[in-house]
Length: 250
Image (cartoon, rainbow, N blue to C red; front, top):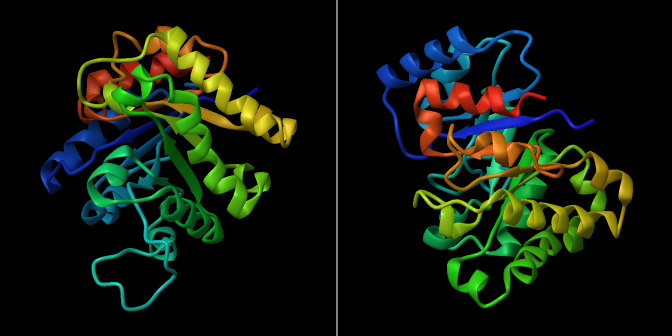
């Protein structure tokens, strides 16, 4: 059985004071026997601070990575550097990186490969815009995003990896896919991987991201192919994030 994962993407929010307060609040509220993996992904400048404050109830992740291993890439961060700071996971292909910073499917696949090469777990974000959903392109768009990794690295690259379905139209908008809509896409993602390797597909964790909150988490996580959440704004609020973590525990 796949163990649920809840990942908090703090995006470009925080200060040394708020990072400390948030982590202390989460540590106090997370039960040691809660059957869920919890990951926090602070901005890069707070990774070292967060890593020093975390206990065994949470893991540390990064929000992005360079596709390059080292070299003259000013402002970039290599996967090996993230590993050196204690990160276990890295988000790649978030819709904001795709839309605002031009990360193509090809570049996202290269970042995915760099994360795997460093021994870390990539969290591959996939999802469609509102126009794409309304024109019936949802599954085709997501299949292409998955295929970019499959074609470059093969299905084995998804062993131990995580996929996060984040409908772009539901991120930070207060809108969310219904549990049934989300499940349909999660099932399609798993079926796409299963067509190549059923064992890898059966073990693959697929998260939902897109205005996940304490009010809708239980219904979303109750779906058979939804293995937790990639949480944005609600991960900055201790009580909300703890409620989401508890909803994911099975």
